[in-house]
Image 1 (cartoon, one colour):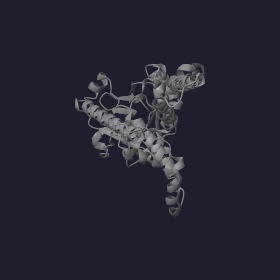
Image 2 (spheres, one colour):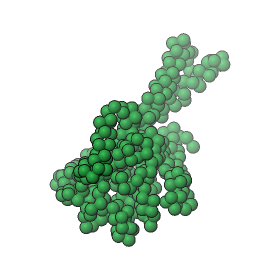
Image 3 (cartoon, one colour):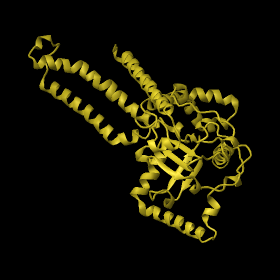
Image 4 (cartoon, helix red, strand yellow):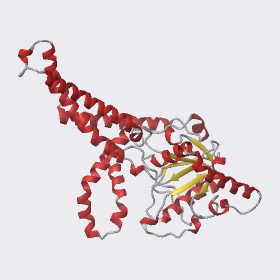
Length: 372
């Protein structure tokens, strides 16, 4: 889920020479702008003109008040792919092979080593003992190696914060971004310095083709971030048509420039990881495919790919249950005038999600091994 942010952040630190050309272009454009000359910033940045007449923050807003709006990012639905691969390995290795070995062979070894071989069905030979020891070492070794080499990739979507948040504070004129530390961490950026990596959205035609839609992207040059690295932030859900990006940008622009009374009240997104949300996320990934076929083929296609949808939705749900709600630093909470309720709400969500995870593990263990 955080693959794009992780790659963008780590690549700039690992390969600074490859980004030096981009940084120089930003610096040259900034210098031309300061001299009153035309620059790329005039073409691509500081969107302050009206993009459309119908702003809409639907499907993207977690919170909105007089101080800030808090929005989601477009890659939430992608969570689950890595977890599906991890579970496909861990279930047979840890969930079946290792417990089976301990349940059947190790008790026999105990009786053999205590000299009570009369309780055994057969007498162990040296080959039997060597085989069982090597089996245990192989299973444990492979499992440890898988965690050692795969943990950093699994943490792109599991055992990490449950969502990436972007806050636009109209009073402090800041844009706050909450990401995992390996993907850039928490940053505060100046609203007035944000640029577009694409054309001016007001010049885009509101095409309705799903394949032409791209998420809203804001960029901050490295000389305006405070940490000498470029910031590129993806905002809102993945749009189903270009017009959604225009509407979302206009919603943000009006809120920041004209105030909350200038935009319609959006429907807030829920935060609790209910299982049906993961099913909806899985279906949203195939929406472009379904939108391009006739209705009579939709149901057969859904039936055909339903096992893949179920596997992906289950993996995403499990990944979400292992995560926790992000906590903003105290300074940002104070700047956003947050009270005690947001923190308490997020902790209650965590407790509820972890309780569901514990219940899920108990049900699986009871069904497979008869535990409890």
